[in-house]
Length: 414
Ligand SMILES: Nc1ncnc2c1ncn2[C@@H]1O[C@H](COP(=O)(O)OP(=O)(O)OP(=O)(O)O)[C@@H](O)[C@H]1O
Image (cartoon, rainbow, N blue to C red; front, side, top):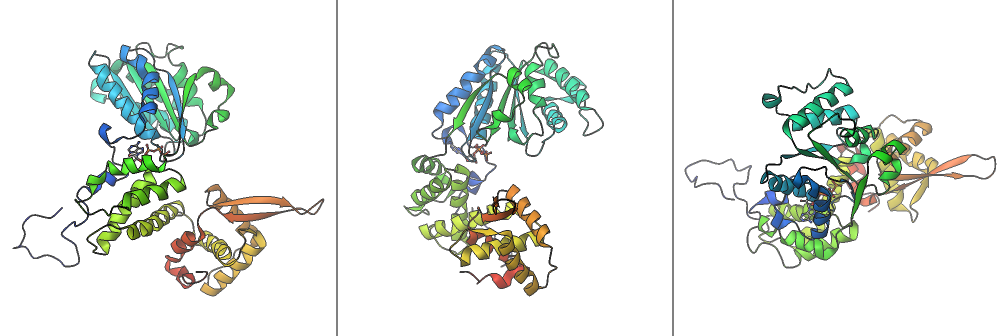
């Protein structure tokens, strides 16, 4: 994009006033929901979701669904897209289908989830019902939800994204039994639960297993050719002739090698464009893609450790340096602690006890940044823990040393 003719206006040279690389960068934004002509390679999955929801076309209860698959495999996209099309089609026969979307990573209690659903499906002017942020019991939120459903919709489809993050599965039981118990009379409910965990149903309580009868669909990671197709379909994010020939094939190959994650592929492509812009290069090249891959991983890791206190960072840095400077990949708490001690002494931080460091390592294991295993020393001689970084040590070091406090370690272990 170029801003309008502003030859008269004096501009601050600190900023750029032309977009030499991107034509429609928003197509590569993670929040962008692509239109039907840009969804690629998921026809079978879309059809299976549509089959489960099909009864809603006649105002009848849809089948519940559980959708599994690794991150970035199109689970949310396909679910949202099919429910949208369902609502449009049903409306042609005067059947009112509405959808609620809950991110259970954010709304992880039964109360906050039911409150979110009620708020999304309500129209206070039509129902005269309000959904206050606080002050109601869980039971009262349900009562209001049932009234809202019956007064406004024939069918509702409730998407529970990251369903495994819910504290318990009570909401599934209530939603799936609402019709049976005559809590609602007119409206039918279909639930689509989305999860990265293939073994999620094992977590369900017996009570829920029997009431929540559902179909299951698995989304496999994308192969390189599918990722290529997804990226090619968004090529118009860039100006014509800007993308080097090998850029999309390389981006797809790199993302396919990792986890077949479309989100990551799109992120790498966008970052490649941004790096080309920063370097004032007239073309996006494979070199930009390689740099972009590193930046994308660093961004992701940065997000994961965003809330980690400085002590946690010092411990992770210790583990990264050990990994980079030896042939091994697993280290005892004692070895991590020794390196950690050197770091905190050198940069003048307080030193925590070995026991506390071990606890923080366990917390990092919880974040999926490291893997900790406990090994027995032999009969009666206790156990010890070993820790291994799950992230690329170079990336971990790069991100942590971008914090000024740890800058002195930037060149160590390269
Ligand atoms: N088949 C596809 N065609 C076009 N774009 C896709 C496709 N699959 C995924 N994407 C894009 O990749 C990104 C991630 O997709 P989506 O959010 O649906 O993944 P997900 O499987 O739900 O991941 P998560 O479990 O992390 O939420 C979105 O921006 C989406 O637009």
